[in-house]
Length: 426
Image (cartoon, rainbow, N blue to C red; front, side, top):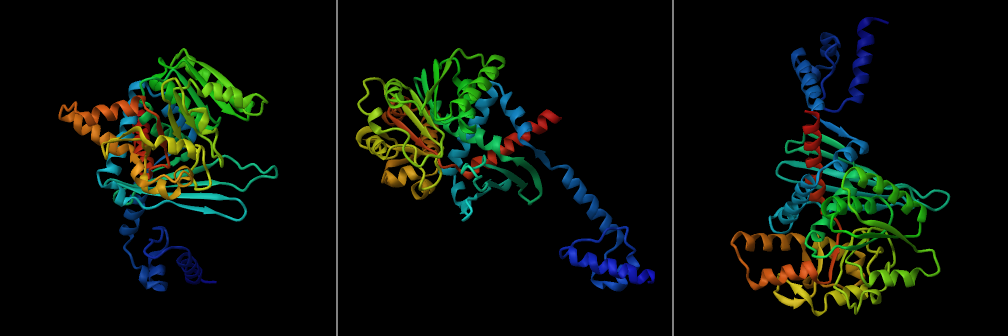
């Protein structure tokens, strides 16, 4: 077989594999390619420049696995963590009142018949675009699903890839930091209860200790898996000794014991902050455990449920929270309670709490709206009734925060992590 036939076969094979507009490698004989495939008559220099440009672009992409992300985030100082919280706060303001909401495509979910669940969450800004892909695999023989995992892909405004980040640590940190925004407003944080023992419970604990560790006296974990909580406490205790040096104690409420409900009710009678971090399909405790407390009103954050059939908070408690004279609505300026959310529209359409609790749009206020109102009042030196009542409500009232996730925070936090990684490398 002659040389031309051999190159012709090679060229035709390459054509079947390469997309339109893709250059042939420079080392192929150009005369033979031109003879057999005239549409690929491209000067050698163009092919070489394109290859070099592609390699240069690839060299600018940062690939961060979970261990790298963990090392970056766990070692942030309190001031650095506050700066990241401010990134999240600015993102909430941009989303709620800055016009960014209209440029965020809706996330989509796929639940396959074999039990596999997938989430696709795209996001955009003036400077970046990207998406997060999350998957939870088919349940094993024991019926249990594996941990959720995925990837965040980032590009600049031209579509050039800038980063690919394993999503587990980023999502754990970002979701927990979202909850730290209203948590930072609370006056009392002595006694804390965390439902769950997974990644969210772990990052909630780390950020609580980073941001307000000197104020916390006790953190109680509620879980059916005592071993997982034991492991979590051992991990956090070791991290606390070398980093935050908080003086709080850790304890467990095992939900499998016969006296669990009695112990839980007693614990919730004096708790200051409750963090729900489980993908539960039924309320974690009845509203009666919090109703009619003689002690100060608590703050409750629910981040674990993210589909209509999931629910962590008793609908009766939600109704109590939005009752007339139950709080303060900074938008309507009425003495009515409200539920705080990150995304009103998506929450009302997809959150099990808001759907099963029959919560109306008028009873929902976004974090970004509160942040924008208080920022505007403070900028003009206002100490008017609205800001006073708002501050009193969010710091001392019965405040329930339901998070469904704002895709834009995935983008801004991920870009901040890329900047941290670049600064460390340089």
